[in-house]
Structures are given as structure tokens and as C-alpha cells.
Image 1 (cartoon, rainbow over the protein chains, first blue to last red):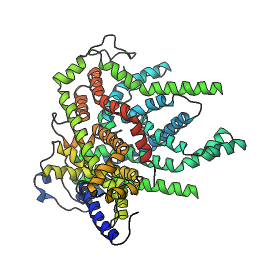
Image 2 (cartoon, helix red, strand yellow):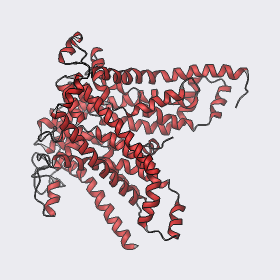
Image 3 (tube, rainbow over the protein chains, first blue to last red):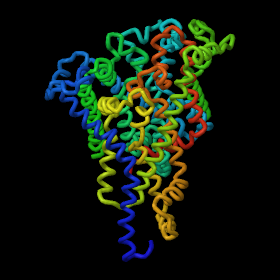
Image 4 (tube, one colour):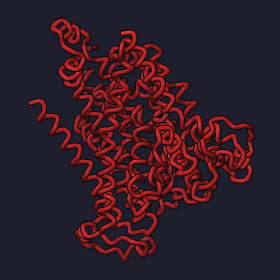
Length: 303
Length: 271
């Protein structure tokens, strides 16, 4: 610390001005190109902004909650909602369980060459989603695909993965687990390394089994990590878009149409921007609610 | 104990290979002549290496242009946002000013807003400025981001105040302190954030799909998805396109993975 007194006063004024200068570029960019669009989207969702309004803005009318009410009666929207929830509710827990299993194995003292295994599990995370979705489209090829080849080894008949309304979503789910589990695995490994070793030693002395240690030490100590992972995984999976766009175009029979894909179609293919904005806000609301619920669940588990 | 160990290794080995199978097949199919990858059972090694798919991509389909678009945009967004985010992160970490805590908390809490919400107005805004289908349409929304500011702030918080005070006594201006003290000490986190931003921009799909409308302006993922529409029966060509798209990100990741992994771990640490 330097001398207090007159000097300090002067210093704090000049320095807070400098702070604003440093903040200005980033904050103005975020304000103009993030905050304002969020508010604008909210307002647009209460209008009938459509292709005519693109040409002549004066045709836009305020229609109150009409877009949201229309969503209620839109079977395609319900289908997209159902598909997305199906995807998130199944893929989320599976993906987290796979990540945790991989993290536990890679954290085990028995294993050497961890870096190699970690690397191969992690590679899908950094790769371009569109590119790997295209690769998987061919992996799921009913005649020549690797998936049916592997299944034929255990005497399972070929499945038309992406062409069958029942199997298309599970196919996308499997690919998404493959693509993402490495990310959460890294976070779980960090969480596991933060658990003090002596807890396990104490439990061993008292004769706890491996399962008991996992259940009563590992899981509770990982709880904050698991909460964080559940939330970011849920948020990410609710934004499902590129996989169905590339692999199925939302088909067959709209069974893989996702909320974001529906928003994209309404907004940027049919230019129903008012309607599309209301879909975007429903998505935001769902994500917000989902996050809130997970926080609450975590809290109630503690008490 | 020994059996358990062997079982773990077998499990890890098999699952690692399974994880990599899509990449192995992708690379080998990309070196096959037309039709050679559409066989049963699938083959994981071309009987004859040909480069015709890559020639096709570059000569007939002009993918070099899309590759350069992706490269240019990813680099520009990375450099500009590093500059913006690091200044803001520094200010949040080392200055006292009115409303700092409130402002920071508001920023953090808006991270939950999915970016799709902003896309319609952003499109209209950029359209009215005549910027749709230009590089600026991709650069502008990437100028700064809250996660980046957060990462840098966390890191800069740990730099001792005494270094800054000492520089101030020597007569350094605020910008000199940022430039000569903070930036050099923050290099590890800057590298981490640079990888995140580079990969994020390179891999991004939905926004470029909306904001770019000409083949010649497309980034690689958009060009690739577009190509897929016309070549659903050409796995060899599509795999060459996928290899081209993935190779740069894999190289960046392999070279700098230490920083990337650290970044993930840091981002997951709550205050």
C-alpha cells in the first residue's frame, strides 16, 4: 500500500475513470449487440412481424399475446417441444453418467497412460459438430453403415436408424453423448481431485466397501460439480439444432424436429419473425425454469 | 487386483477405440475413390489411396474459399475479443468504481440467456446496416463475451496489487499497466480464451447459417452442410470435406490442449 491521504483520493477518481475506459468497448458491444437484441426480441414476440414487415416496417402491428396463444394450438410446436424434452431428459442423465464413469476410471490409481485415454475421449468435444454429424449420418447408413455392421456381429438385424421415426431420435442421442461426454469428464476429474484423500482412508479403516465410499463420500463431495454439470449440459442440450438439421432435417415425420430448428424455420425460412421470437422466448423460459429447478433440487437434497 | 487392473485397461482401450472409430473411418473414406466407402462390411483402410475427393473440394467446389473465410473470421474474432475481454476483465478485477459488483452480477446472470433469443433482432439490425452476408456479420456479435470477461477477471484477481502500485509510482499510465504488466502475466489465460474463441467461432453453425447467404461467404460448416444436401450419396467426398473442417481444430487443440483443459476446469469453479 502506498501513502494514504490526499494522494489516495485523487488516485481513486482517476482510476475509476480509467476503469470506465477499459470497460467501454466490451460493455458497449455487449449492450448493443446482446442486451438490446434480447429486449427487441421480447417486443417482437408481441407483434406480427413477418415478411411484409421486412420490406415495410410500418405494417407491423402489436398483437399482444397472440403469438404465444397460437403456439398453444400449434401441433408442430408441441411436437418440437416433446422431441426436445425427450432428447434432454434421456441424453442428459446418460451423458452425465458416462462422463462420471470415465472420470472415475481415469482418476483411478490403477491406471497409467491416463493422458492417452483422456485424449481419445476428449477429441469429439473439440471437433466441428456439423462435420461429425455428417460422419455419423454415414455411420447410421442402413446398408453400409458401421453401426449396423457392429450390431450384425451380435446378430441384430439392420436398423434404418435415421429413416425410422422410432430410431431417429435415439440415433441422435447416441451421437450427442459421444460428442459431449468428454467435456463433463474433465470437469468431473477436476472435482474428484479436490476430494481430500484422508476421507477415503478413514472410510477404509472403518471397513467401508468401494460402493459405500462412492455413495457416501464421492457423490456428496461431487454435488456442486454435478449441479454445475447438470445445468450446463441441460442448457446445451435444449439448444439442439445442428444434429437434426444435418442428419434428419427434423424428420422422419417431424420426430427429430427441435425447438431451435422450429424457431429457425419459422423465423428465417418463412420470415414469421414475431412468431419465431415467441418460440425463442419459450425456449429461454424453459431453460430458466430448468436451471431454477435444479438449484432447488440440490438445496432440498442437502436438508 | 491384477485381474481388476487388466479389466479396466481392456475397458478403457475398447471404449477409446470405439470413440475414435468415426474419425478413423472418416479419414480412410476421404482417400477412397467414388463408391469405395459404400460397401459392406465397412472398410477402415483404402485399398488404393486417391486424392480425387480433395481435388474435387478445392478445384470444382471452391472450398478453399470457405476454408479461408473460416480461418479469417476465427482469427479476427479471437484477436478482437481477446483485446476487449481482457480490458474489461482487468477493470473488473483491479479497479474500484461505482456499481461494479452489481454490473458484474447482472452480466453473469445474463449468461443463462440462450443466444438464439438475440438472433432475430440481430439479423434485422445488421440487415438495416447492410452488413448481412459480410464478414462483419460474424465479427460483430463476437466482439466481446461475458464468459471471456469472467475468465480473465478470475485470473487477474490473483495478480498481486503491489505490482500495479509499484508501476504507478514509477509513473506508468493505466494503459501502460494493462499493456506491460497485466497482459504479459495473463498470457496463460489469454491463450486459453484464444483457443475457446477460435474453436467456438470455427465450429459455430446456426448464426453463420443465418447471417451469410452466398456460397462464397460461407464458413466451412455452413458450406459443408450445404454440400451435404446435394451429395447424400457421396460419402467419400463428404468425408474429405469433414476432414478439411476438423483438421485445423484438432491441430489447435493438440498443440494447446494443456491450456484448453485448464480453461474448462477454471470455468467450472464457482466463486
